[in-house]
Image (cartoon, rainbow, N blue to C red; front, top):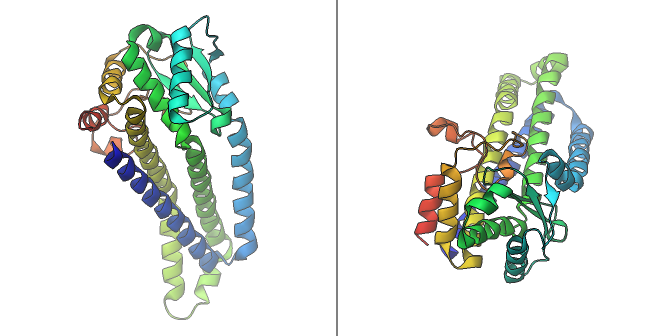
Length: 295
């Protein structure tokens, strides 16, 4: 368990660091090619940051509304509420609010911008189809997302994706509106090199940024699995729950591409193949179960 947790934290840090390096290089090339100066770059960061902050603080309410989730009481689902309370104590966290989605497909997610404003949401199908240890494993996984500040990390990553896309767009616009003339004034072939690098980065950086975002999302799922197993001290419970959820054929009606990454198992149809795995928000279920069984 400790090896899995440490490994996934290291890999997440490396991916975020690579992301920051990509943005720095793109910004530097943009300054060289387009001559926008520091003011334009600061403005881009402020615009992207402002939109991200607004979405960050309203993300939990937006997600719950999109998912048609409703709050529950201890009288309605006593075991769910008791399990959330018990695992929050084990994790050293404030007790999250409990919500359910009235859908027979088994799944769950956590949201909230910090542990004090967090929510654990499960489908009624999960409550019906999981046994006690499986449900505790799922809740522990979602509790780990809250404890590991994964919602905050994903928000930061979305900001960086937005900045990368904005900067790459500025490279193209500056190139067509005078960048070529500025590059042409550089002695020798330096102007051509700057333009070539700028255009290549402008074309590839949004794709690279998305791939890094998805890779971070997959690593955080592995981390939540390991951390969840640490909370329950029973990895087999979560492994069994993942196997059941993946094998269930009922579609989750309220799921969409905007919220799919939040769920413990991707509620949308997974694409097969090595290339398609790069564009998945979740690791393959077989790999997650294998990692849990080795703990």
